Length: 147
Image (cartoon, one colour):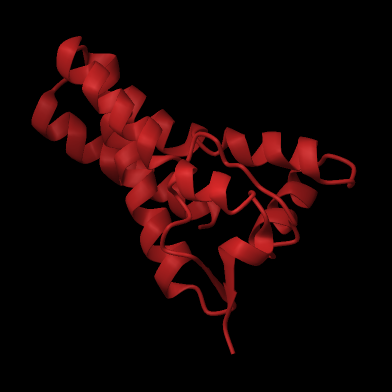
């Protein structure tokens, strides 16, 4: 999903969260985490791409699926579940905000990248770290090219 869509969704989420929670901490963390979780794209670019790092090269590499291998370590339902367990036992506004922001991001990525994209789709299992490991983090096992 494009960064601009995540930015707009983080603004919308922030407005909704603040309306219901009246908590600046939950709102800021939810809004920022919706966007900042994508830092793992930059990490993968630095590790797996032979291209010179620039924001433009990073966006093209991601949007056009120029990658051959990708981990997206923070885009993981297993880690999200673990965060939920931690938030349950150690509740805090920061963890509430993280759960909301990451949840919004993952929901949008799952819908867009696995179902609505026109040029290619990611396998519906893409955001499970376990699946990525068994797929060897390799593009051939993760990408479904549209006809």
